[in-house]
Image 1 (tube, rainbow, N blue to C red):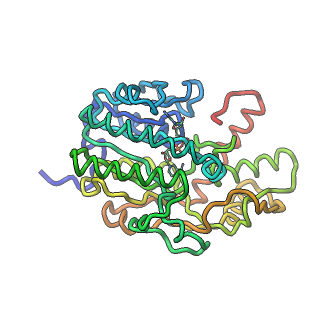
Image 2: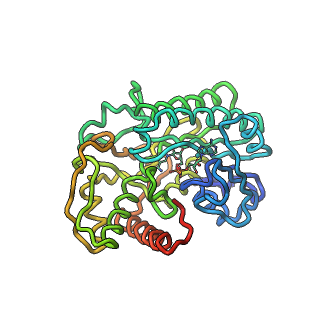
Length: 347
Ligand code: NAD
């Protein structure tokens, strides 16, 4: 039989194998549940601490449980009979959240500690952990034109305070559960993910959603201004949600990547100023920029070096930012109008 060169869940699992997804009331894990459902998997268990009424997406036919995964008993229940476990639950948000709430970010270590132990005890075949580019050494990210980060740049360690350190130690759990106990673990370092069903308001939103919302709001209210955090020269790369969920599937089923952190991000670098221009061009408006130099702005520059993912998977996230941002803008605009009309929205 020919070797399966691009293994995915569809080629590795039986359709009724139990897939457990933690954090599924949120953006990425909710989209992952939908992705697996659309692939024809019939036994998906989605878990989040938010009440079901507040989940961003509820996928028909998916078992949805409201449980706080900081507690070991709940993690045991969540992982019962799991064949694969995807742990994306975390207390997190954009720069405004992770710079202000470091304790909350650090406390996600409880989720990760109990989830990996529970996945192991349940006899799960594979365990996925969503790490972050915030695990990288911040000394390498001071300038807007900093070179792209490759996987080895996490050490010597100087991660983002709070959130980044929590990710780094949880990665180490994954590596040691493989080395000592033989649990097959997979670790992706996400670089800014955006798209429909992402947080777009309320303080946890990230730059692409925030810029779209600000443009939509300015148009609606007839305002001529937009406020930008920092001087707008900071650079980032942004990955569209569909690339993210597909990348998770590919990474999780590629055995050469066991216990090996890998970048999952776009390598198209853009400044926040240019991101604003893009959102303005989608909205068909030009606004006067006000720079809030006291607001949280994060590192000077951060990009994903995609050499490893290209080499091992022969694939990398490639949705053009203009395409993904337009879809995101349109979705947020509808959310904005729905909220104005008194309808329920995701954030
Ligand atoms: P999100 O906030 O939309 O989703 C996370 C979900 O986890 C939320 O719905 C939250 O209620 C849930 N959660 C938090 N604490 C919990 C607990 N104790 N028990 C159960 N559920 C709990 O965030 P997201 O953008 O979907 O991020 C998913 C994962 O990806 C996180 O681990 C995050 O750190 C990582 N990540 C995201 C990005 C990004 O750009 N969105 C970048 C890097 C890493």
